[in-house]
Each structure stands twice: as C-alpha cells, then as structure tokens.
Picture (spheres, rainbow over the protein chains, first blue to last red):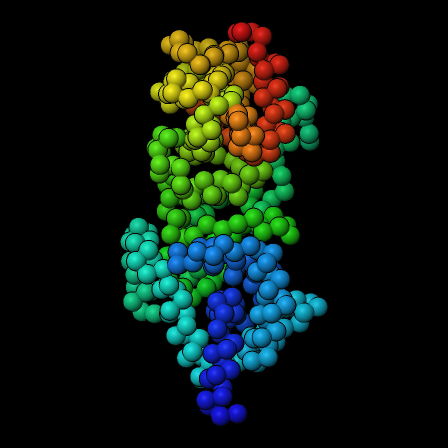
Length: 134
Length: 249
C-alpha cells in the first residue's frame, strides 16, 4: 500500500465523528467496552455546542456495533470482538497519529465562538492554556 | 427497612431507586463536582479524554440504562446553582435542571438547606410554568417558610396554582388568596421537607421532593430524593390532602 493509499483509508476511517471520538478515547485508554465507548460518543455529541443533531444512546450504540467499529477494524485502527463487545486500539502509524491529532484539534474546537465563551465562563486558565497548546 | 407506606417516611422509601453511575469525560476530574455529587448515592468515575476542559462532559447511567449528559461548560452552574426566582429565565434553561432530571430517584444527603433550596426552585419553576394545579410545600416550620414567603405569595397570586403550605405554627403568614396554610404540632411535618406538584393541566410535569431532617433543625442535615413519576406524586398529594386537609379547610 502506498502512503497515499494509507492516507485515503485513514481519511475514510476517520470521516465519521463517532469513529473519531471513539479513537480519541481509545488513544488515551488503549481499550474499552462497547458500553463505555457508547457513553463517551453519546455524551460528546450531546454536549457539542457545534452539533444540532440529537444523539440517542441506543442508536449510537447500535451504529458503533454494526457500522463504525467494523470500519475502524477494517482500517486496522482497532480490533473489535463483537461477541464480547470489547475494543482494543492498534499501534498507530506516524501518519495515523498525525491525522488523529489534527482531527482532535478541529473537533475539540468545533464550537467556535460558543466554545470560547464557555471557556471564559469556566474561568479556567487551564482550559485556555489547553486550547492554546492544542 | 421499609417503613409504614402511609407516611412521609414510607413515601421517601418509595422515591429512592437504584444507585447511579456518573462518568466524567475530560482532561481532569473536575474536582468541584465531587462535593456536589458526594451527597448523592452515585459512583463518580473519571475517564480521561484529551480535550480542553470546557469541552468535557459527564454522563449518567443507572445499570444498563443511559440517562443523559451535562456539558462541562455548565459545571460551574452546578456547583453554584442559580438562586434566582423560579420565573427567572436563567433558572428556566439550566444545566442544574438537566442534572436534577438525571438524578431523580437517587437518594441524597444534604448538610444544609442551601442545595435543598436550589433544588426546590426547580420544582417551584415547573409549577410556575404550568400555572395550574395543586402545589404543596412543607418546610418543617412556618418560620422557615417565612424567607420563602415572597416566592410563594407570587406563585399563589400571579398563577392559577392552588398553593398549600405545611409547617409547625411558629409564624403566621399573611392571608393570601390562593395560599392555604396547614399547621401541625410537630410529627412528620416538623421532620420533613416536602414539595409536591400534581402537574395541573400537564400531568407529565408532576414532581415531588421529600427530605427527612436527620438532626436538629438549625444544624442537622437531610436525606431525601425526588421523583417525576406522576402516579407516585398523585399518591403523595392524596396522602397530604387526606391526612392534613381536614384540619384547616
């Protein structure tokens, strides 16, 4: 597979926000249950100031199980055991790491103005620093 | 041990459900949440997520059931809930209300009346928004009710709510249209904080809170729970009317 092929496949794997959020969590923890990933993704989407799509937990969980985790597994970013419903993160290539980091910066900043205001309200210098640093 | 079902203590036992799990997703555990949630029968877990603090969130589940989420941008409001009047728009759209909904049926202990008052605002607000129906409130003694009187005077006179207040008779509220006072010589009325709204024209808005004093009124704490189950609320309202309704018709 050429570098260009790999980037294409990674872009496809990370094209959906549910798959990206699952990867952000797995990059931090290495492994997770389907239940934990569904909590993480549902909460993320529900709390995203830039999102106007309501997230229903059962729908998110079913989509992760039937669609998104198999796609991430095909791209060899994760291994997924659909019976035990356990997910493990694979070691990432340099290209995958860089792409995931860029995506996280964009997604975490997705709220635009609203995110900025929320940061100020929290009064958290830490939060501002995190944003500057990311 | 379950107590006599036909008592406020029995209703409190009925309100309390299984414990819940609160998972905080974000770069830090948001330590300010701990003292707030430590009063509830919840397991608090932090799952690290590499996002800015303002983009974290918490999720609540009860066993296999996912109940909902609250964004971190609103955590500050949870820690210092709005003390505004129930008709204030800030009280109306709040993360505190979201969390109040998610924690229904969760037993809580409170060391003072501060958070009990903030939670009470949410229930008073629901009643004010519907504007019809029966709203019952007991603050142990009428002298405690005194500080809440301006709120209840407005609920009674500016809405079509029938407001009934309970308490040990150590203060006499001014005669107010729409406001009925039922006094007791102590007993469970002197020991429980009670709020119950039957939902009026919108039964889905029914809600009730019960909290039992666990020490002397001035210094002691409370244990309690709240519910949005219309049937439980209706039974509680019937109990209050049936038990205390005859004394001050």
